[in-house]
Length: 88
View (cartoon, rainbow, N blue to C red):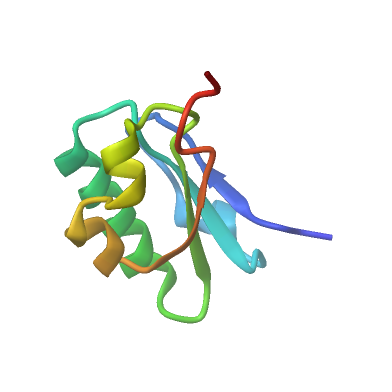
């Protein structure tokens, strides 16, 4: 059962790889917040409103960012933010 496609931290991605998935998970937190926002917005534009967008920070965010992510990121509509804080 397909759960979600994955967009890693690499520079290139191919939307054809996401065909048939109900959601696309985008790796964030390794680049600047502006770059993350642009990548998530680009994915959202490519998949349209009927496919979910999720983000995965893999513990890269501080508490303030996890509680209130950049407004432009929120505007791109990620439905789930996974593992935003590192374990302490």
